[in-house]
Length: 454
Ligand code: NAD
Image 1: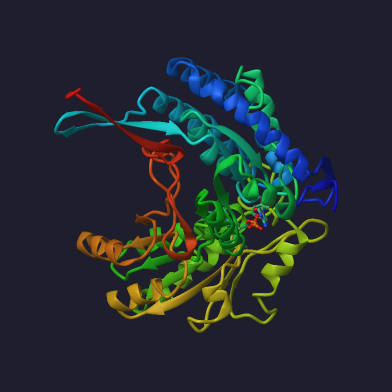
Image 2: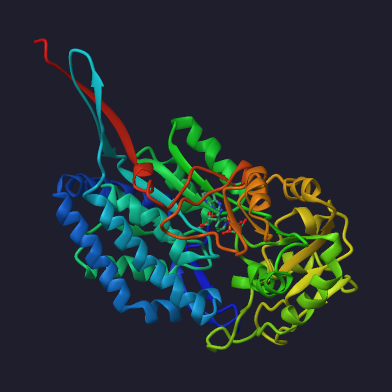
């Protein structure tokens, strides 16, 4: 069992840091400490908890640039994206802090007494995060969990522990009680698994691959442990001929190239109505070829490297050298680079058209009419996101109703906003994060009846 992880800069392959890997004994000790911290935290006045979370948000705000530069180094994210990601942590903490004093139960009319529901914290929450959006995804679980009165033990992905570790330091600097928010880097099968199996962890919030998510859910079933799963996706970008084709084509490149395509919401199946197909591709080609790929710390860069050699090999396996389609440019030499790629002429059931590539690769498929578009959009075991481009409001609503996915956007490619619920249908996940109900997902509802007859 390895006791430390090397963190590499994906743009240069240089070693950025060496981080100790937590053992099951470390996880056990952290959960015990978290349990004690949680009881004190839950007993504190809501206004005080809210104030501390706001202070945490303010301290993150003071360190946005530092956190962003760290994310550029360990994850190869573009500087613009990384700044947004650090700002997202701040915003989530602020938003969750606003919920602490509004976490209301209900009073329900019943005969013979008064009935109230109380939303109690669950206890210690285990958050297991992936490497593709290390900071936001850590915060989606952590901020509402803390706000609802829980403690959090976060296990970041092996490749990207540095910003999570820094956030834990900033929490202490902001005055959050010790051990309330702990970060334990380590191997998924060791530290992650120890969190999943630990009887002192009340809920697992997992974001990652569908394969690991299913295994975690099965283990949680053993203890009826609560679990939220945010898994993979193969999201459609449906372009009808009546859409603003120029706008649809211009928005398409970054809908699957953002974060080098390592985005569970990436619109990697571009479905275009046959009568607009040629025109769309004509517009798409220069847009894809013009995407600036390179040094992620350069403000002009739109797309950086992939996270690792393993990811690069995986992405390559979907794209033969003689593949038909559009290819952008990528740097040569060290670093895990792959050019923006749009594949055409594939069968709808080709591996690149149905499997999650998790790289800068999309496929374009033609469709005939609305029913055909919906059939193709739903021809997947996933159901995370999707976009619908049309000027026909009725069609936008009909297709939004018919596509089985948790997050749809019309004439845009939006998926994640901290104000709105986020999560998947089918094998894209279970449960919802973010939005107005985020805190409730970290509570247990207790019903208390007080008799007026005694
Ligand atoms: P992964 O499943 O390999 O790892 C995710 C996390 O789980 C890591 O921290 C890893 O260490 C941990 N882990 C691995 N095996 C474990 C085990 N047996 N027990 C407990 N923890 C374990 O996925 P990844 O490669 O890090 O991330 C990429 C995947 O995540 C993609 O498939 C992507 O679609 C998905 N993802 C989904 C969302 C979403 O919100 N739906 C968001 C981001 C990423």
